[in-house]
Length: 385
Image (tube, rainbow, N blue to C red; front, top):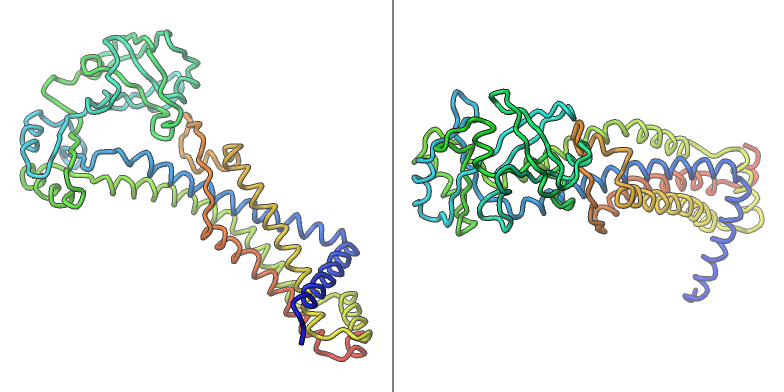
């Protein structure tokens, strides 16, 4: 009966022989290792970055209002009257309602659309003082602005409006605040020409999260011309956008996957004459078929595991420490104002297992199949082929 120590010693001897065997074909195996590592690196980078962005969006939307109410006119979003706020405040299940002011402004200095917003009264930070503004970190970088600088913008009436920069928003929220400009309500209404009795939309806080859908139905019954957007719908929209961008990259990388599939197929299609002679010699000197299979299995496993670990570690560093410069423009989606923020690293066992099964197992299996065919033949027959 084979003891555990004997089994371990046999596996160690097979690993030593496999490493030496790989060294004898150093050039071929090094090229295979580098191509394998590149494939794992690119695939893992896309998967890690897309997952981290979706997780960041979920965290940022955790404090978003449960419901947003908008007024539709001719199928388009329009300003709504303050009377709408009075009609929804008394609904059962609503613990708070507030009118919001926000709008878009094209900034010719950076050739990008920005968002002017009046901060919500429910936030811990108060709106800027009259004539002052707080902007996102990405916009501050693009404009080269610092606290105390004066920013001049052209209003709806063509007149210039000067704002003193009172602060820059925290970079931790840059995913959603990259293009943001915060002003107070009076300055916003003057800049866009919005009358005092109008709001851009309403936000509702619902006391019981399980009643969000029911409250939305009540709002639509009371305000037939409204559109109600739930927080879960906003979260799904963010995730759908990131999923689509990730899919575009994965489609592009499918060419590499095809090349890798051809490589695995070439492995499975047969062995070289040198490898066949090597198997025949091993069989002739007394190696069993199982030993030959295990040796070749260790060869494939060593190459694939080392390439997988190297590619995954490089992808981890690329995404979480270098901000994924290869994929930033596609996955973040900003045309000019790219947000800079630190993604929180996280180890996802299911994600690693999926990448492992997609890249390692097919290659190892493709390595073993032709070896099994050759190892089951007589040594003389193998060496004559």
